[in-house]
Length: 471
Image (cartoon, rainbow, N blue to C red; front, side):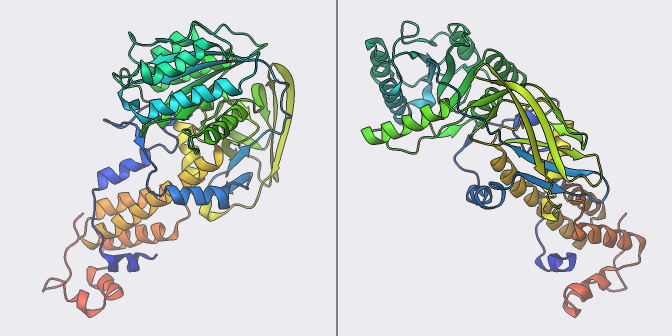
């Protein structure tokens, strides 16, 4: 849309300062920025545009391994969806540490679902597996509901499942960090066993908020001990930073309930999907190097790479004319060494991939450049694509309103913000040039009004000539 066309709409200015602050808003969650907005709380339900994000995942980003964007000045930006092709590892006996959120937010249906999941899981685990069930709440109330790790068919496990609705009740506030550390202390590292934490709840830690640094430390500890964190979201309001952040750091996954757990077939189907997610091959990188064509890459530390979904790697291509991007990864799968020689051809850059530029900039400026994107790559790209385009359109719309009321300082800032988001946007460049002309007196409101609406709008000029421009 041109500046002239936008002027015909006369949008309402919402506040330049607040709008410009959006450029500092993270596209990755607080793993990118290290801070949250004041008073920020858990995100509940699907955000506006959720269906659009799903469609973009399915149609635009789900099947494209590499995206590129070429700024007017600078190196080619790339987004690589890395998905290792490795065979499933030999099965190992499992140690499943189940942490059930029993805080007030889980009262009612959520705790009923947790009981159904624990019951179904115990029925499907093997004879060599072990289960420990915990109630996760305030520091004083957090405790094991089983006497340590038990065989799945043990009566103690069945009693713990029943206790979730017959003894426990939703109350208090969860201390996620403290409770997780307390439960992990009972899980002795053993690489001969497949050890996982299975969290059932909303991810909220109302008793004491989990900071970015604390979350990174928790995830790093579990990753070093080869413990995967898996989450089943239960409840109305979910804390995505904790749910997705800990799974991304450990090679785990978020497994959502789609079935009717109150019915045996639904319970069996869900637990089957859950166990399948537990058993996916995960490459734990130890050393890695990118090809000479890569000038910078993020995250600076490769996270665990799951074979069932892609992990986002972004950066810039330093070698002009490069036709591909490559990397060598040395790591382990279930404790056994593996070497990955990864490569993908670089497609031609597209102007509608301008959102990649802001994503790389945010990652470069993040306090923790080694932290991965919380979402799997296709969803992260779809979400960023939607969000950044909204930023650009909002800046352009408000810039035009500022021009229409002679607020040229604000207009300049807004056009600059739009160009920062999309360096190749023609409307932003044209608008900035228009503001410069009006400041210099080379273009008057009457001239602009004639382009927008003809005599009717030109008649709005004050008698005695064009209005003087405020500088």
